[in-house]
Length: 152
Image (cartoon, rainbow, N blue to C red; front, top):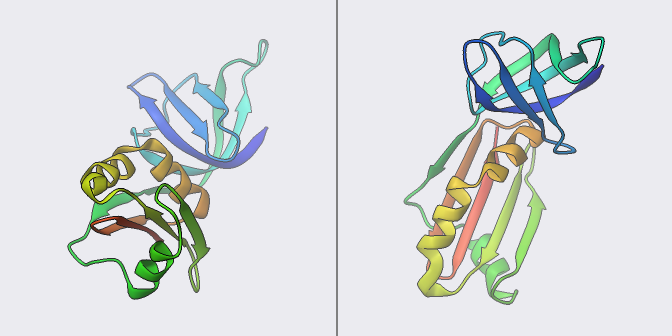
């Protein structure tokens, strides 16, 4: 058995593929208990005998979708100050008060939009949110600064 948080990477009527957000291990389900691509699942999986290569869902404790959104608001003053203190290409991660994290990326000014798109479209963004147990990712930017807020 394996208990953890998983993101559904593929799904059809007969099966689904889940990736463990902690270790990256892939689990193919022998049947699909009505899961959809992109959904995060906290629960327990069990291998199906005799070969133990296909898995089944033993329990689902929580199922949620992570919304990844770009916001018109600029990064906070704290995020701008963090970016000003780090070289281009660096990322600073800090915990939020309560639940979640904030990641501040310093990027070349002319590549800010590209960096925002990369964060928005990266599966790792959803996996990180699922690992943190949050349902919302807010991306704020201004030239040279991208702030990624993982929020409950």
